[in-house]
Image (cartoon, rainbow, N blue to C red):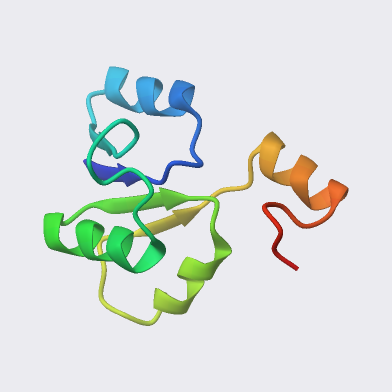
Length: 90
């Protein structure tokens, strides 16, 4: 399966998916690192990849044709939620 992981997905998850034989694109450490959500969506659509992210904002695309969106909640995501807004967002 072709997968695109957002920067917020743990590397151990990326490594495990690769071990399972998936074609995983991780933009960390590439020229695309820091790419905003619209750009990330374009990459996923252009390359025909399932997008794995913790960003609930991608639910806006659920009615569009796509190759899959998996929005996960990680322990770190939950901790930020309990501690209040992250990165200055309200």
